[in-house]
Image (cartoon, rainbow, N blue to C red; front, side, top):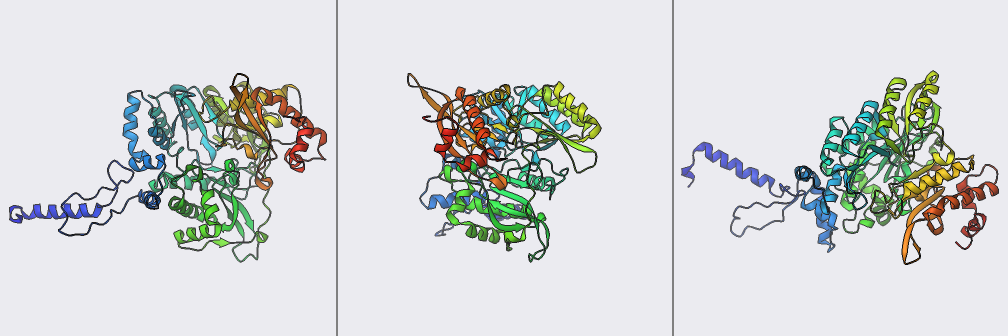
Length: 600
């Protein structure tokens, strides 16, 4: 039969067969790297080898296969990723949008890879969460998000506890236009949800902070783009958080992240080059009552991305693909121990990590707890950042546009978001500060808030999240309003964190006072919104997991309960003792007596 083909046809066929053999075992067209074996006739008695995954999804497929080989079932989400990689479903999602249909069931999981979350039944709409490295946007981008949110969403946005923005009330038809509009402005929502590395946080005052050791912006940016351009880094066993803290005056809460890079000053005589390094902390997940722990490893500044990449790849191979409650990095570390995990990271990198005793590290500058609101001098002479207080992160689109105008006219054109659900306008000349504060007041916002309001954060709550047991933002606002209206002055910094479920997006365990949503039984076998209250949490050098104080408090009773707690603290504290220090000094039974909560 070969005589029937011309020389050119023979060469074409030989090339075609070689190409098919080269891609044998590579990812399929429709799947998450799904294996498509060669369909030709095998040679007689030729052994049939198992197809080997190839391409960027191979590392995930191999991990899934190992779990199944060990007799373990993959979670539905893992199967969904294997059956169809969420990035490969984009054209189908565009088709759904044209039909004005939401992505439901496992497609709701897949579309989160693109930053859209169907939040039914609480709202029959999408929520969109962005990716904003180091939490910093240009004023024109901030204004653009406002325009998009007015056109396609509910006319407002929220600043989140990861120094991010999210918009709500996006219809099925408008989801794709919203995220494509972000890209048109140099922004993205890619990978901001589901089993991916979330937006990268950093010190909000990076580059302008008088006490910082490192300007975190270039490192957050490099890691941000490294993720965006490597498909291998999507579809992890679960979500993953990374933060860079440059030792500035506003905390980035890096110790609540899976990977925390902490800027430190290494002393002379340590056996390594003295100067500023990163200290590596791993395994933070405060919703599971754990902070990122110091590994004893220090990293040269320019090696952070290489180290983070290796950590992620070890996690991809080892993270639990069956039980999603045990799929975070913390549980790999718990199972393996830190040294085994770090050895695997070294094998991935092909180099040894540097271990360094804490004796060779200078004390880190401490962050303030009120420096995210009000006026504060920058390290640039004559310039200041102005911290704008928001009500639990909420801004109207019109307020956003006005803030962008203020930033461009009086500041350096940057809008800096913080993990405290507010924002900073930087680069304001001292002579313009009063004008800026008045302009902010004129749009219904403020730079002057009470200590309670400054440290009050809340997750979305059951008005927009199906997992939440209570209206967190509503009751958090009532707590702040009540304390302010009765004129109860708290002269020390205090953090009150209100979260709706055990996912702990508002990190209730690290608050001086932490509230977690609960359904509180009432008459007629009914329930109402309520909370369980914790006390004594902290972060940074004061890191501690709060203890449960009282259960099943009706939401409507929380403002009065918090008032009792604050009054008891003010009456019985020693000197300038913090609320957390006071709470930790007493047993729970004692605190109930002090706070007049006996029998509760």
